[in-house]
Image 1: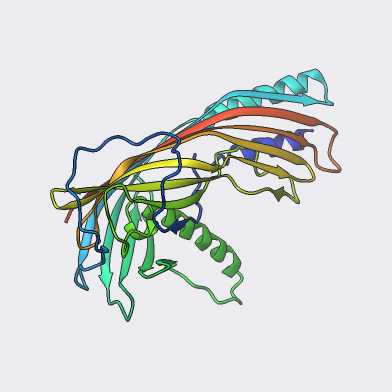
Image 2: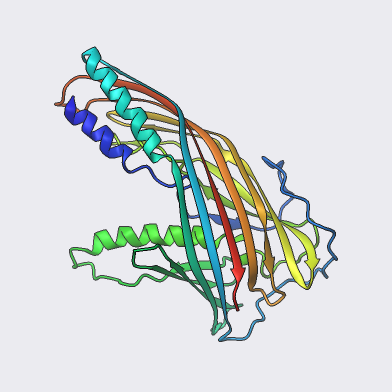
Length: 340
């Protein structure tokens, strides 16, 4: 049973950020579905001709920004019942579980520098190089680069620092890491890249809504336990940008969202977990220049979820079964401002 409890402790130590990054897709303008929470009301803005907005910034143009993201995560109402073991062990396991949850609650601050450069279009409606430099005090900066090619699909291609050959024994490890970094970068850029929502090249009139579907993985400190897992459809939300009009020569969009798929069930040989998203909200704004480049962005994202599950000791270990439930929540506040 000590080995089983050790697995629990290790899993708890790797609780992730409140909204794990995932690849998302944009869609054409649509009539907005009923939102989870209506975004703030912007001041009256002038209307814009219905001609499509395209990337007109000259090749070689470079814009620089400063960004900051504050992330908070909380675990509350945890219930942890271990059966099939002596009572003392069960109480000790429950105490460890509660302590681990409290230790994972907290706040992180992630400052970053952002650059966007207009590249030669090479027969496309436009190409942009997005470079993000994530900085942490006392640590080496993490630089992420992706190229956005405009067009019907508006593809985003991550540019890893290293591309090892398949024969390299580290190729698999670096490949997995680059996949995670690509998803992280795509999720970050979606906060201020107009093409992430399919805005560029589309007619704009006040009230037009653009959408992007995002897959969520709310923090679950026990999600890594169990083998042979089978998962139902992932939890997902629809993020929306609503065009409000033109203010001081800038295109202004407001944010809101709705839940699309609110529950996911994971089953495996030693774990059965059900995650239910009870609330998700999104607010803020995006301001874009008439030449298609972003100027500033604000985004506040929050959620609440419940995780219930049953864990059994892996085969060959001491007998024991855990039934648990916990309520968790998180928020993320991002700001981006232009430097030059």
